[in-house]
Image (cartoon, rainbow, N blue to C red; front, side, top):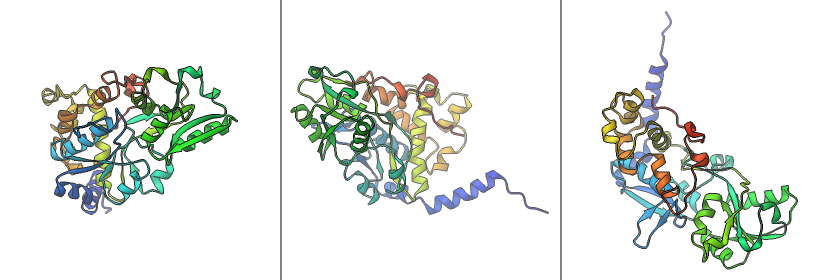
Length: 338
């Protein structure tokens, strides 16, 4: 008689084995009592500390959401400021537990750098900013222009590709940091400034006369930005990935920071599974039953994070666009808790 092993039994057995083999990052974070989060220290709307050391931004709130899921305390985060150049080595070496720093998901980064991207928390694309006085209406009018760009980024490669593909001459003016690049453009050392469109809106706020500059309409690349973790720890990969999915699912279900406690009484099966009143989905991640409640209670859902940091409730006032929920014409879509 053949022995029949169900899919659920196999999954349970594998899950126990995998959890035992790969729980090192979660255990390290718990024993340390704080999450080390690699962050951008100079991009308004995504990662920026004020004079008192208080951090704000969409990526910053993702770090807080991970801490909330683990500790039920969003303040148990150490934000580690990283440049574009040193962000990957800091994650690889273990200096940070997770990198949440407006970083583009590419094939080489996902494979040769030993990283696992956990999702896309902001769909972006590279654009150009110029002075209105140049009377340029399209990036295709930038032939023979001097363009400020940051070294060691996908931005630098995309810039060269775009000009070559359109048979235009390019004078690249490169700088080691985003801050140096912005200051050089503001000082008139180049005709145009290129980076992710979200970054252009952010950096424009820092210019001496923001209203004298315009972001051109062309988007020349796909820049899916999101958190990443090291290869080799599937449980940690799952946790960071499902924090993102919980934020998306919460918005889709209408669960907010203000109503999450009331929603615990819901009889909707999807809500019950997400909030932990049914099933053991949090425990499967190595967290508590109320892991998603902790996240939403402390930071809100994805829409709330977006609006206060980069959306209409922020100085950037960026439209949701591609970052709207899939139910509203956007790309943000999360697998179900089931």
